[in-house]
Length: 490
Ligand SMILES: [Zn+2]
Figure 1: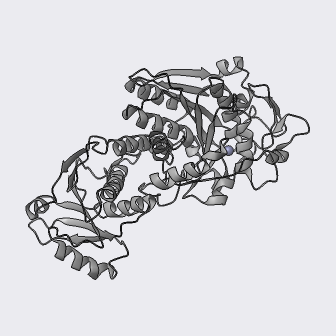
Figure 2 (figure 1 turned 180 degrees about the vertical axis):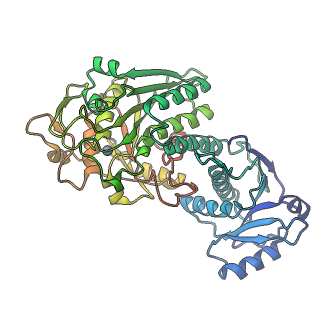
Figure 3 (figure 1 turned 90 degrees about the vertical axis):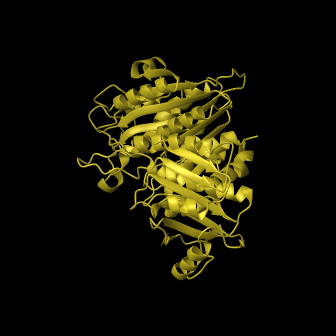
């Protein structure tokens, strides 16, 4: 996928240049007086089709030249949210899916330099997202757009949109892993795949197997993994070190990696079980983010902790009313076996926070309650550093992967108070399970480590989200890379 080359030309495309490329994405400001090749033709056709030049509807136009160059075009005002630009860019590239171009021209006319860069960035991200290779088990394969070159005209950036390419690669890894069916991606397969990627990227890899976790008395994790017929569950720990040795403290990315979630003894009904091979997406977001940061030679050390397991039914599976003890000694009363994500994360967070990183971000497809609260176009965010709320929202607005914070006040704990153990795993009644799950997790973050938890309600959205064309979104990679690189958490 990343064999796609970006060619940059400072000057706007002449008629000869336009004629020499068969496919173009062109975006013009609705205020511009500036001329560009074929402007009159394009705009009159646009007005004919869209009826309203302000509405930003992308239209398809074939130019009256030798190859009938195929243009997807729209007009925009100069104030667009990042989310809108990404969504629009996806529509623009989708108008080329039938012609399956090998190269595509991009030209943005009439905006300030800063705004042009934002629009181009969104277009490049959408092109890379649609070209990413996803799992396909059809016996007759039809490949995606076989694009090998983006020809950018009228704009040149020294950074060559390196960040967009790195994020696209991280996101593609997250999505492709998440789409793998659970008979093709068991914890065993997943670990093998992670080992390959770790080798390519020179990450140090450590695996806490079930026997290691038994030594560490990680009873919350093991309660979930004990239902598996294969003892292949465990916690993967990956370490990225920047080339230039740095004394700055580490950042830890933690992810839920349930390769299939049947619900366990509290078996899910059919409709809710379908798609549960994606219950490992949190771990894949952590991994995809680590990959993007590595490609960008990020200047701080980062570790990725992935909790890999399956939530099975069976005679050995854990049950409601079981009491288990996490590795920090906390006793947990099991209430519902489908709340397995917080169980495997509890021990993972204890082990990770014992290392005293400067920040932990965890990702999990954790609760239905989060989806009921904000739908699937946003993800929920929680933190033990309240003052970060405005900047966490801002990072979402700027990156186009939008999040919204929820409260984590101590009194929510009353709803998970247990008569027989230190804490209940969840409440039998509550509709605020996303908050209770976060309160539960927070308890296992030791040493006052600043912590952010992302409940991935937008991990799967029918029809895609923003620039992402597949239902599986890989949400979180783009957000986190921006959050860290642009220093929102000062
Ligand atoms: Zn579950």
